[in-house]
Length: 313
Image (cartoon, rainbow, N blue to C red; front, side, top):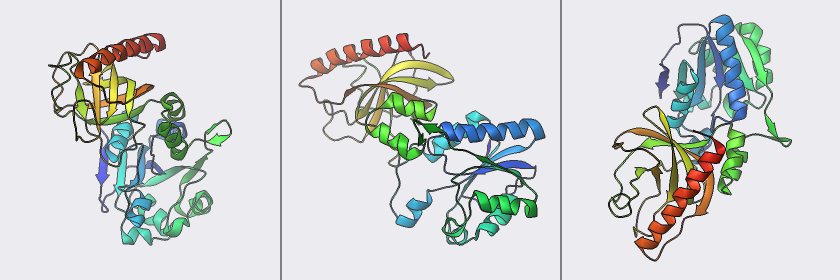
């Protein structure tokens, strides 16, 4: 099980580790390449794998405005644990750490706390006061502090670097399949199932599970998506509505509501992962619940057909 240091400054990894630093927003193809290289160090040298990140994006802390993220802190933890990472440090972005020089960051955090014997970073890594540290600085300090350095070239798509910004652009257009290609895995929303308005099952005949995404979660356009849902270790197909359900509620928070194919069990209070696979249609307000029910039948057929053709289950 992965060990997390959340908001802690006084910790120590006792075993030799291969360490990386970054936000890992989206855990896209470039991130996976870097994390995969860490796993190779683990297999070859027996090092622990350790990820250093901040508990809040530095730009959010400095600007005072929450930055929208593809992957929330909890989702990042879930993803890193699924990958087999041993340690995740979510360090508080305090005044003290803001003013650490690049070398002090390497010495006091990566060496003294993370026990780095190897460091794996991307070509655009930045750390230390005013991002004065970079891959070249790490290379210059490697002899002094006795670690092996590996710099990973960024993955590209059509001559453009794959980045969180690029993925957000595609998500904002509803281009889920393109975003998923850049991510190397489906865009996902993790959350705890909460009670909805109890209209889906008793009234419409479409029992659903509801998740409320945190405010910092970057969401694609409101609408209906074909989805794959991970619940209690099993993947199911489904259709997911992201939005405010204007037909059945006047005022409601933004929610993620999913009708799961072939699932007949109570998931209230359970943690699930909703993966979006394909954008079907925008959210709209229907003139009656009967019209909504007819559309849901069409959505269901669309979803079943898509899942059957794509063979994703």
